[in-house]
Length: 96
Image (cartoon, rainbow, N blue to C red; front, side, top):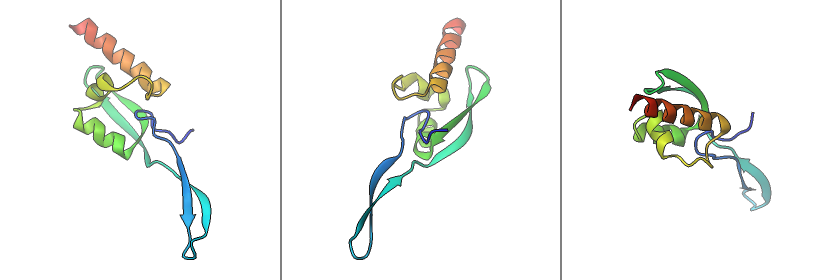
């Protein structure tokens, strides 16, 4: 399982550890990933995703998973999230 957010595409970054003597060694900064189940109002079911804490706040800010995926860029989404986005769009088109 890759250390990458399924909604934002946020992944590990690299930098330096800096000792008290100012010696530099390479390190990785990992994203704060959480396994969550988000509810979709359109599909009326839960979707399991592995997303960062920042993405979880963004989902809440945009009014849920459906609202977030409607505005999200396809390039940033994982294959699983892209599939869910298309399901939601199809269900909304059928109901309208």
